[in-house]
Image (tube, rainbow, N blue to C red; front, top):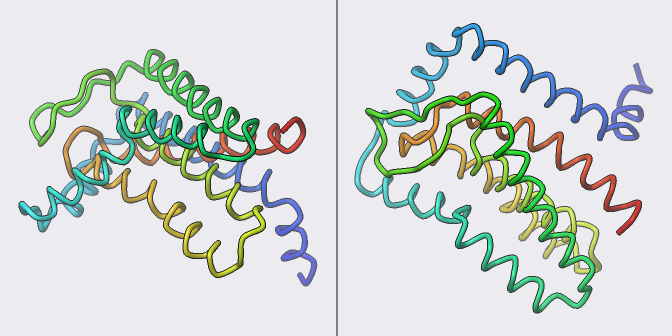
Amino acid sequence: MSNIPKYIKKHWKPIIFSICLIVFVIITRLLIIDKITTFDNTIYKIITYYKNDLLTSIFKFFTFLCSAYFIIITTILIMIFIKNKKTGYYIALNVLLCFLLNQAMKLVFIRERPTLINIIEEKGYSFPSGHSMISLAFYGFLAYLIYHSKITKNTKRLLVIPLIILPIIIGISRIYLGVHYASDVLAGLAISSSYLILYIIAYKKIG
Protein backbone atom coordinates (compact mmCIF):
# COMPACT_ATOMS: atom_id res chain seq x y z
CA MET A 1 0.00 0.00 0.00
CA SER A 2 2.87 2.38 0.77
CA ASN A 3 4.03 2.17 -2.85
CA ILE A 4 0.69 3.36 -4.25
CA PRO A 5 1.31 7.12 -3.73
CA LYS A 6 4.76 6.78 -5.31
CA TYR A 7 3.28 4.89 -8.26
CA ILE A 8 0.57 7.52 -8.76
CA LYS A 9 3.11 10.36 -8.55
CA LYS A 10 5.34 8.64 -11.10
CA HIS A 11 2.57 7.65 -13.50
CA TRP A 12 0.03 10.44 -12.98
CA LYS A 13 -0.11 11.33 -16.68
CA PRO A 14 -1.24 7.92 -18.01
CA ILE A 15 -3.57 7.55 -15.01
CA ILE A 16 -5.35 10.86 -15.61
CA PHE A 17 -5.31 10.29 -19.37
CA SER A 18 -7.04 6.92 -18.92
CA ILE A 19 -9.59 8.13 -16.38
CA CYS A 20 -10.60 11.12 -18.50
CA LEU A 21 -10.81 9.02 -21.64
CA ILE A 22 -13.03 6.50 -19.84
CA VAL A 23 -15.29 9.31 -18.62
CA PHE A 24 -15.59 10.60 -22.17
CA VAL A 25 -16.41 7.14 -23.54
CA ILE A 26 -19.08 6.60 -20.87
CA ILE A 27 -20.74 9.95 -21.60
CA THR A 28 -20.59 9.25 -25.32
CA ARG A 29 -22.17 5.85 -24.84
CA LEU A 30 -24.99 7.32 -22.71
CA LEU A 31 -25.55 10.00 -25.35
CA ILE A 32 -25.77 7.45 -28.16
CA ILE A 33 -28.31 5.30 -26.31
CA ASP A 34 -30.22 8.43 -25.20
CA LYS A 35 -29.73 7.89 -21.46
CA ILE A 36 -28.15 11.25 -20.60
CA THR A 37 -31.22 13.52 -20.50
CA THR A 38 -31.95 13.13 -16.78
CA PHE A 39 -28.34 13.99 -15.92
CA ASP A 40 -28.39 17.06 -18.16
CA ASN A 41 -31.70 18.32 -16.79
CA THR A 42 -30.66 17.80 -13.17
CA ILE A 43 -27.37 19.67 -13.51
CA TYR A 44 -29.06 22.50 -15.40
CA LYS A 45 -31.65 22.94 -12.64
CA ILE A 46 -28.93 22.99 -9.97
CA ILE A 47 -26.75 25.54 -11.76
CA THR A 48 -29.66 27.84 -12.68
CA TYR A 49 -31.50 27.56 -9.35
CA TYR A 50 -30.48 31.11 -8.37
CA LYS A 51 -30.57 32.55 -11.88
CA ASN A 52 -30.54 36.36 -11.81
CA ASP A 53 -29.20 39.31 -13.79
CA LEU A 54 -25.97 39.57 -11.78
CA LEU A 55 -25.11 35.89 -12.25
CA THR A 56 -25.97 36.14 -15.91
CA SER A 57 -23.55 39.04 -16.35
CA ILE A 58 -20.83 37.16 -14.46
CA PHE A 59 -21.21 34.02 -16.53
CA LYS A 60 -21.31 36.04 -19.76
CA PHE A 61 -17.95 37.49 -18.73
CA PHE A 62 -16.46 34.06 -18.05
CA THR A 63 -17.77 32.63 -21.31
CA PHE A 64 -16.15 35.61 -23.10
CA LEU A 65 -12.77 34.48 -21.70
CA CYS A 66 -12.92 31.58 -24.15
CA SER A 67 -14.51 33.38 -27.06
CA ALA A 68 -12.71 33.13 -30.38
CA TYR A 69 -11.83 36.84 -30.29
CA PHE A 70 -10.34 36.68 -26.80
CA ILE A 71 -8.35 33.49 -27.35
CA ILE A 72 -6.98 34.61 -30.72
CA ILE A 73 -5.99 38.09 -29.49
CA THR A 74 -4.49 36.71 -26.27
CA THR A 75 -2.52 34.10 -28.20
CA ILE A 76 -1.18 36.72 -30.63
CA LEU A 77 -0.15 38.98 -27.74
CA ILE A 78 1.63 36.09 -26.03
CA MET A 79 3.46 35.25 -29.25
CA ILE A 80 4.55 38.89 -29.60
CA PHE A 81 5.75 39.49 -26.05
CA ILE A 82 6.99 36.07 -24.92
CA LYS A 83 10.78 35.79 -24.88
CA ASN A 84 10.85 32.20 -26.08
CA LYS A 85 9.21 32.55 -29.50
CA LYS A 86 9.24 28.80 -30.02
CA THR A 87 7.06 28.35 -26.94
CA GLY A 88 4.72 31.00 -28.33
CA TYR A 89 4.27 28.97 -31.49
CA TYR A 90 3.49 25.87 -29.43
CA ILE A 91 0.83 27.81 -27.51
CA ALA A 92 -0.80 28.78 -30.81
CA LEU A 93 -0.48 25.26 -32.21
CA ASN A 94 -2.14 23.89 -29.09
CA VAL A 95 -5.20 26.09 -29.60
CA LEU A 96 -5.40 25.22 -33.30
CA LEU A 97 -5.14 21.46 -32.78
CA CYS A 98 -7.74 21.46 -29.99
CA PHE A 99 -10.11 23.55 -32.14
CA LEU A 100 -9.75 21.15 -35.08
CA LEU A 101 -10.28 18.15 -32.79
CA ASN A 102 -13.42 19.72 -31.37
CA GLN A 103 -14.85 20.55 -34.78
CA ALA A 104 -14.17 17.03 -36.04
CA MET A 105 -15.92 15.51 -33.02
CA LYS A 106 -18.91 17.82 -33.39
CA LEU A 107 -19.33 16.58 -36.96
CA VAL A 108 -19.20 12.99 -35.75
CA PHE A 109 -21.87 13.32 -33.05
CA ILE A 110 -24.01 16.08 -34.64
CA ARG A 111 -25.86 16.94 -31.42
CA GLU A 112 -28.07 20.00 -31.63
CA ARG A 113 -27.73 22.72 -29.02
CA PRO A 114 -30.44 23.46 -26.44
CA THR A 115 -33.07 25.69 -28.01
CA LEU A 116 -35.56 26.65 -25.29
CA ILE A 117 -33.21 27.68 -22.47
CA ASN A 118 -30.46 29.63 -24.21
CA ILE A 119 -29.74 33.13 -22.87
CA ILE A 120 -27.23 33.83 -25.63
CA GLU A 121 -27.14 32.63 -29.21
CA GLU A 122 -24.48 30.23 -30.48
CA LYS A 123 -24.04 28.46 -33.80
CA GLY A 124 -22.80 24.98 -34.56
CA TYR A 125 -23.28 21.63 -32.88
CA SER A 126 -23.26 21.01 -29.17
CA PHE A 127 -21.19 17.91 -28.35
CA PRO A 128 -18.57 18.19 -27.03
CA SER A 129 -18.39 21.78 -25.78
CA GLY A 130 -15.80 23.77 -27.70
CA HIS A 131 -15.44 26.32 -24.90
CA SER A 132 -14.74 23.54 -22.41
CA MET A 133 -12.20 21.82 -24.64
CA ILE A 134 -10.33 24.89 -25.78
CA SER A 135 -10.35 26.66 -22.41
CA LEU A 136 -8.87 23.63 -20.66
CA ALA A 137 -6.28 23.10 -23.40
CA PHE A 138 -5.34 26.79 -23.57
CA TYR A 139 -5.35 27.76 -19.89
CA GLY A 140 -4.13 24.33 -18.82
CA PHE A 141 -1.08 24.57 -21.08
CA LEU A 142 -0.36 28.08 -19.81
CA ALA A 143 -0.59 26.75 -16.25
CA TYR A 144 1.87 23.99 -17.13
CA LEU A 145 4.33 26.47 -18.64
CA ILE A 146 4.08 28.80 -15.65
CA TYR A 147 4.48 25.92 -13.19
CA HIS A 148 7.72 24.90 -14.89
CA SER A 149 9.02 28.45 -15.23
CA LYS A 150 11.66 30.09 -13.00
CA ILE A 151 9.33 32.50 -11.18
CA THR A 152 8.80 32.24 -7.41
CA LYS A 153 6.55 29.58 -5.89
CA ASN A 154 4.10 32.15 -4.51
CA THR A 155 3.74 33.77 -7.92
CA LYS A 156 3.21 30.36 -9.47
CA ARG A 157 0.37 29.64 -7.05
CA LEU A 158 -1.25 33.00 -7.76
CA LEU A 159 -1.24 32.28 -11.48
CA VAL A 160 -1.59 28.51 -11.79
CA ILE A 161 -4.54 27.95 -9.44
CA PRO A 162 -6.87 30.45 -11.22
CA LEU A 163 -5.82 29.06 -14.60
CA ILE A 164 -6.78 25.55 -13.47
CA ILE A 165 -10.13 26.66 -12.04
CA LEU A 166 -11.05 28.94 -14.96
CA PRO A 167 -12.01 26.17 -17.48
CA ILE A 168 -14.40 24.69 -14.92
CA ILE A 169 -16.12 28.05 -14.41
CA ILE A 170 -16.25 28.59 -18.17
CA GLY A 171 -17.86 25.17 -18.56
CA ILE A 172 -20.45 26.01 -15.90
CA SER A 173 -21.15 29.30 -17.67
CA ARG A 174 -22.03 27.42 -20.85
CA ILE A 175 -24.61 25.35 -18.99
CA TYR A 176 -26.02 28.37 -17.16
CA LEU A 177 -26.33 30.37 -20.38
CA GLY A 178 -28.20 27.47 -21.97
CA VAL A 179 -25.93 26.93 -24.97
CA HIS A 180 -24.65 23.52 -23.84
CA TYR A 181 -25.89 20.51 -21.95
CA ALA A 182 -23.96 19.41 -18.86
CA SER A 183 -22.82 16.28 -20.70
CA ASP A 184 -21.35 18.48 -23.48
CA VAL A 185 -19.26 20.33 -20.92
CA LEU A 186 -18.17 17.29 -18.92
CA ALA A 187 -17.24 15.42 -22.09
CA GLY A 188 -15.34 18.45 -23.37
CA LEU A 189 -13.34 18.79 -20.16
CA ALA A 190 -12.62 15.06 -20.08
CA ILE A 191 -11.41 14.64 -23.66
CA SER A 192 -9.47 17.91 -23.51
CA SER A 193 -7.65 16.69 -20.40
CA SER A 194 -6.56 13.56 -22.26
CA TYR A 195 -5.57 15.66 -25.27
CA LEU A 196 -3.59 18.12 -23.15
CA ILE A 197 -1.59 15.35 -21.52
CA LEU A 198 -0.59 14.04 -24.95
CA TYR A 199 0.27 17.55 -26.10
CA ILE A 200 2.45 18.19 -23.04
CA ILE A 201 4.27 14.90 -23.55
CA ALA A 202 4.92 15.84 -27.19
CA TYR A 203 5.99 19.36 -26.16
CA LYS A 204 8.50 18.00 -23.65
CA LYS A 205 10.06 15.80 -26.31
CA ILE A 206 10.29 18.29 -29.17
CA GLY A 207 9.74 21.68 -27.53
